[in-house]
Image (cartoon, rainbow, N blue to C red; front, side, top):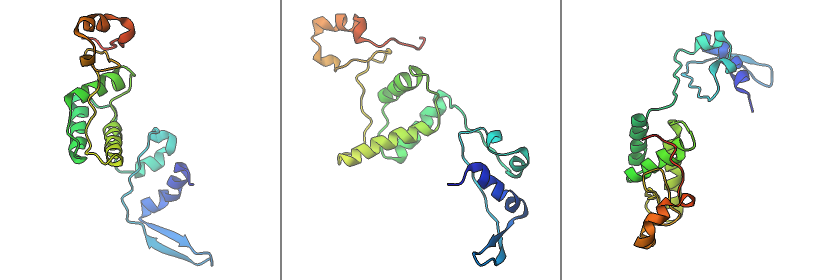
Length: 173
């Protein structure tokens, strides 16, 4: 395996001059065109991967940071469409509250494709059509361990008010 730094150091001159030189095991050396568009993707800060001289040779650097909720929803809906998974507002709100806000996870662009890909793969494995699961969630920052409809009506209010049956809401209203 080649480290990112070694690869970038190897390509710094060919990227600049648009040609490279290769050497065969026999010692014969020849020139080849190096007319490429290179796309690097990393979670690391670019300054940790390469020096300033190399970074100047990369024409475009695009930082994709945390999305806002509207951007995240649009991306989530687009991935749902792409994977033929019907969008569910209830499931999306559950994902935001329980997976992101409660766990203090940023709204990163990688999550919708990763999570929905797993939904699709699980459905495929079970020979089902992909669907977003409907969480057992009240929408007020609490989850139940079983559907509310299975709790007798007389016990519903006491069940919901019992602290051991609820998860504390960490978002502000």
